[in-house]
Amino acid sequence: MLPKSLELPIKCSVYVAFFFAILFCSNEAHAQADSLKPTALSADSAGHPYTAVEIQAKFDGGPEAWGKFLSKNIKTGTPVNNGAPPGRYVVLVSFLVDTTGKVSDVRIEKDPGYGCGDDVLRIFQKKTPKWLPAIKDGQKVLYRQRQMITYEVGS
Image (cartoon, rainbow, N blue to C red):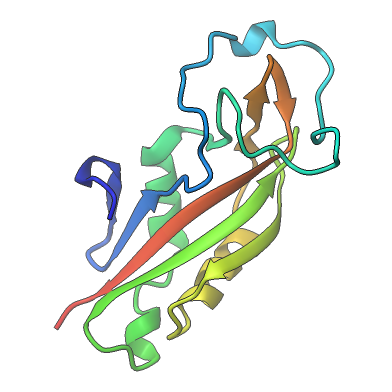
């Protein structure tokens, strides 16, 4: 369970929390966006997206803007409409953020059912605008981001 400080209420039945299960490095980066090197790394030497960076990819505007975006786009009644009993339903989604901020290769890694995974997939594939790219060694890099979205069905 994530600390309460990382949870953002969305309407009254959905909560969003940032989930960085593959976070290896949490140090603050010292590079400023305006001092980035002009070239951008698309992937590591093996051709894989980075999973450890100085600055993770993030939604433009930060967690508050992300929460507002989700509150406008998520279908909060999805689990109830699909017969879910009271409880919490956590969807874990991962996606690539490229050096331009484009979101692609969306994968539902954990789907509790009741239409939750499909709803999250819909949002990420059709609605999500560009993010701010991750930074490694002062350069924008291809990064696999992970996000946890929790639906809560009351009794």
